[in-house]
Amino acid sequence: MSARVTMIVPGRDIAAFAPAAIASLQAQSEQRWRAILIDDGSTDDTGAVFADAAAADRRFEVLHHHEARGLGAARNIGLERVDTPFVGFLDADDELTPHAIERWLRTLDESGSDFVAAAYVRSRLIDGVYRPGRVQPWVSDATNPRRLGMTLADHPAASANIVAWSKLSRTPLWDDLRFPENVAYEDQVVAQRMYTEARAFDVIPDVAVHWRLRADGTSITQGKSQLPVLHDYLAALLGGIDVLTAARQSEAVRTRIALIRAMDLPPLQRIAAQHPDPAYRAALEAFQTALRALPEYDAARPDSTLAAALAW
Image (cartoon, rainbow, N blue to C red; front, side):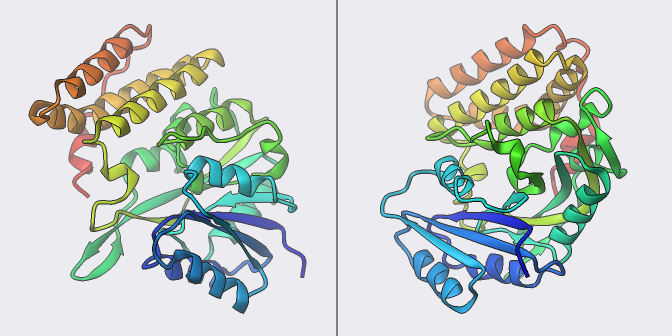
């Protein structure tokens, strides 16, 4: 049985979570996949967990980096080794839902589109167990209802689904597309390029991934109080808008600004108000100035219901 899908699975120091990610691949209802496990300079037993998986299941291939190169570089190295018609991504501390690959593939087989984007949910530690929450409103707006053969002009709200691991692509889409390296939030600009460069894309409301928010706070998305992380985050937000602007997708730009104002800015403003380094506030203020200068800003009124929804 030849593989149709390559899943690129990078991870660093996630030995406690990698077995669940690996098991979620093995539990797929669609079994025509292979996976490239990339140990990105781990100092714990991640490499051993990956090696054990490959020894027990020939569908897994393992690459080891002696020093951490970052998520973008790890994914790019994986992309060079893809030899299947389709490619997807899974961070090694997250989990696929059992029918994720099947539903991605079935959708693309039906539509002929370049990629499909699915819904996802956060997974948080509750009573000692990581439990998935509900689909957040901006994810639902991007993926529900099911739509095939879309462009951003048809469905600008799709631009809110910016994570790499919610999507399955036809491999040729990546011929001239790679992730930025040595920065955090490397998938935001890439996602907007996918939307603007694809001939067509699909969206489906099926939850494909449980995105783990680690209880120890070590997830990248939980480090926004750190100034270098903030710089990467704000650069990624503006970089994604630049991609949409260059593609003349003004409605998608308006949608992104409205979402940033409702979802991204309030928690950053709360951090800035108490942050000991004035450079943090200065960086955030410069970002807000750049945002206000965009022609779409005044029309990009934030949805007041989103902030409340972020509580879970």
